[in-house]
Length: 249
Length: 251
Image (tube, rainbow over all chains, first blue to last red; front, side, top):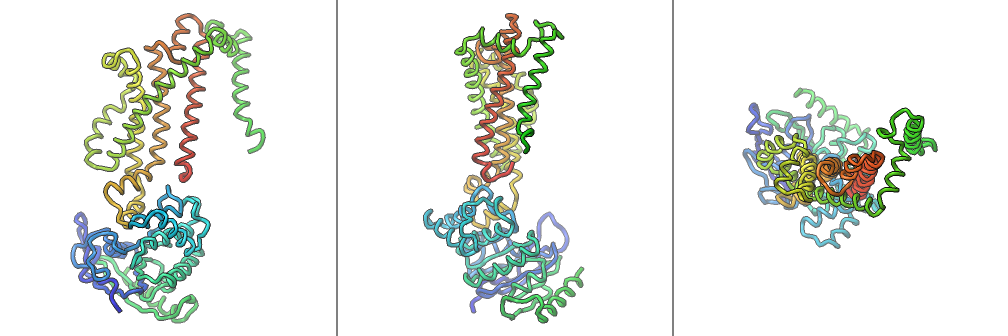
């Protein structure tokens, strides 16, 4: 399969920040439609890695290819989902999604139609007229996913999108994301610090350690979805990852 | 809200007026110094033709709207620029910090020399009263946009002037709206003070002229008229904000 994302020798350090780089020289290849989870404690460089792929930050060294093209900035088929609070509060759910579509040149009427289609996809048909403050945390993140999809991206970059949700909503949203992903196949890079979240979602988990940010464990999960938290294979993986994370403390 | 709570405000107003009326009628004061509210209202309504009263209110409102419009436009524009572009902030801040604490009324003598005794000098002073709170609120609003909002916009490849106009300014609207309300209140206060000093019409002038003619009842009436007109105007502004920004933001 073609590589959707190719990262080689990628490093990032900040000018005002002495000490080891935030991200060491890392290499990573991600296949098309693969669901990759970056897992690690705060400050391990996982969000920095995501921002570099998104083109929101520039690397200190190395390079990133998305679909064979070097990343020079945002845009170009990269959709991003952030933690709660990234929707535009002055726009309704429908307008938030349409904003993204219009931004890539889709005409107004078509953008509205696409917004309604995506609202239905994330289970929010009929809630398009609501403003973000009128939506629950889980519903806001559904809109955020729909907004990212409105960019018609090849890759979806998700920065702890469910990190601010309660556990019940969070579990529901994981199922929801998998359902959407099954319908709209995308390459996904998903950052989290929840081990279980990674185990439920990922084709491949990469565990990261800080300073310099690097991969310390890589595990492929071939179990079919939906996965059960009681699956002995997942529990064994959980123990292994936890030992790895605890070890770098 | 219980029924009692719903009417609490009315009860307060009536109790206040009754207490004052009683105090005045029982002769706890010299009526030339402290007229009863009924005397004040009667004196004003019998002495001043309704048309003249309306003209005073209209003149004051016209001045405050003109000064407010200019001060708000300048304050919003410069505040947005200062909150968004660092060099603008660095240039503006010292000047603004020096001028801001000056009471706008201190400018009146200078304003009269610059603009004469007519409308422009009053409008200028109201402009000053409005400009600074609006400027400060707009600049703060722009500087305190949640970073994740801007990051989300940039991830959609929105930057430059589009980022400013389509994302940053709307995001700062709640702060700007609050600044407009504060600016209006200050502009109104400054207006009346300016009219006390130099004017031929307006509610401040009404208060001052009546005192000079020994008609203290009319002065007292004028003072309450100022309060009520300000209240109604502020209420309109607040309602306009609720209908727009208030649809998506909880103040």
